[in-house]
Amino acid sequence: EIWLDKNTGGVCLSISSKALTITGIDDRRYWTHISTEESRYPTVAYLQQIWWFQVDGEVEFGFPVGTYSLFFRLQLGKSSKRLGRRVCNSKHIHGWEIKPVRFQLTTSEGQSVESRCHLDNPGNWVLYRVGDFVVQNPNAFTNIKFSLTQIDCTHTKGGLCVDAALIYPTTVAKEIRSCS
Image (cartoon, rainbow, N blue to C red; front, side):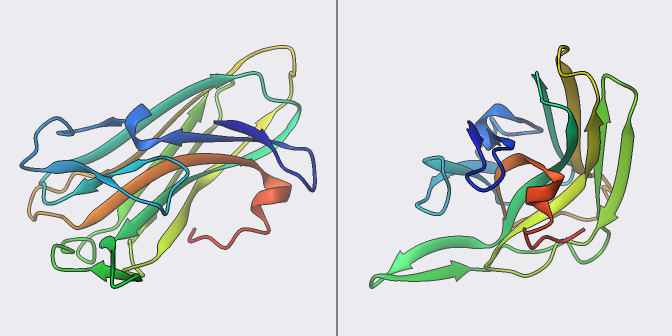
């Protein structure tokens, strides 16, 4: 999805979990798509358990000149409604406290960002900041490749919802609470 921020007029993008390349997504022993009302999309990808965790994305877009921030929207735990109230099942959350996940971003202009962060705050959707990139040529398409990985195979990881990757102008992103 693409939209303009109502306050700044800046271009914003959202890439759903179904448009991302997720290792093992077709194996129901590891991943499922669950329905939710907490996303702009009808489903999110839910990780039950896996050894090798990797989510990759790529987008090519004609951004206006400016600085942009890329985020992953993630939640530890599986939300549902019970008696009309939101509850979060944390039964399968494990492995995220052992080693941090690695976020990466590269652009067709040669920009590159890498960061590491432990996933936390179970039961809440969190925007994890991957990094920023600068667009200088509004007449060319900018290709952005980004990823989220935790490939230490000494332990399993599970209980994670992957909603989307989001790109906002940095002026808009400064107003967003995120983990970076």
